[in-house]
Length: 285
Ligand SMILES: CC(C)(COP(=O)(O)OP(=O)(O)OC[C@H]1O[C@@H](n2cnc3c(N)ncnc32)[C@H](O)[C@@H]1OP(=O)(O)O)[C@@H](O)C(=O)NCCC(=O)NCCSC(=O)C[C@H](O)C(=O)O
Ligand SMILES: [Mg+2]
Picture 1: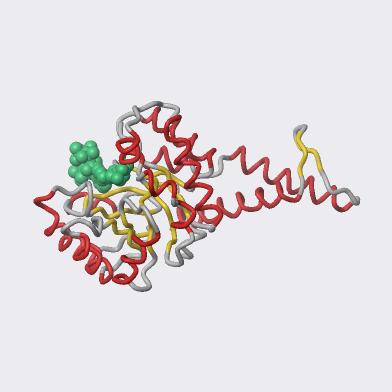
Picture 2 (picture 1 turned 135 degrees about the horizontal axis):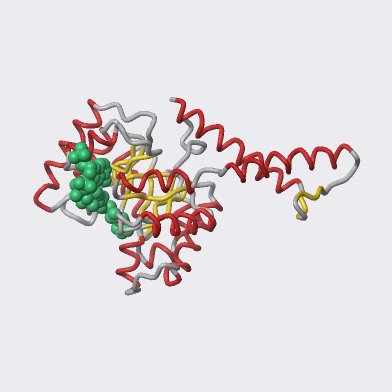
């Protein structure tokens, strides 16, 4: 599937060190998986996790899920070996943590060659350099690292994520300007489905393609939040029909439910319908 048209509603982190969780992933209705060698793996397990993950990806069928391997930073003792190992793994992309400038991506691309790169956006410098990072030729997607960002900014958790908004907005602008995929950060309270739903709705409304997740219990909430709803689809169909009718009578604008519909709204409506079709096809297997 074309990586740019596939859905990214639910993007689940799985510790690369946990064979049981790696196995479970094959049964979960997630759109993408981040196989983690970084923060989900303890220092003592780092080297073994690389081998466990290499084997799981070689032997396991994770399709149709997108397979992204998150390595340790290249400034750590594991980073370069992780990058070399990821380049040879049966995966679709490699994810670099704490990207602060395009130079970080150059260093990784020297090792991983043509493998698409994703960037964790989670440092203040990364936010300030978001446009230059997004313009890197090997970059396919961005993942918000809101835990690291909160640590660096010394912000406190707020349900409205007000302290995060500048960073989230800058990365969104950068990703959209370059036509990249961009996925929102995790919601740490993995047993709080209600709070997760609120944060997913906020991320969806801002324009994120989906949500990164840490536990299987979060998958359904994200899949619903980031898929077009029945109401969205009904409105899209009515907008297209009304606009076609207006054009047929020489008008450039239609009115649906008291709101104007112009060609740009019709383009959005068509995109929504196309997205729903891709999701349906994916779910049908
Ligand atoms: C949070 C957890 C440690 C909880 O684990 P556990 O206590 O094992 O949960 P459960 O007993 O409820 O698990 C039930 C079953 O589900 C499987 N499981 C659990 N988590 C996952 C998962 N992430 N993927 C796949 N499967 C999972 C268990 O194996 C159980 O299976 P079974 O026994 O067969 O029924 C744990 O969920 C966990 O480790 N989550 C991942 C944490 C993680 O990835 N952290 C790093 C990413 S977050 C981050 O770094 C973001 C960013 O960088 C930032 O800065 O913000
Ligand atoms: Mg992080």
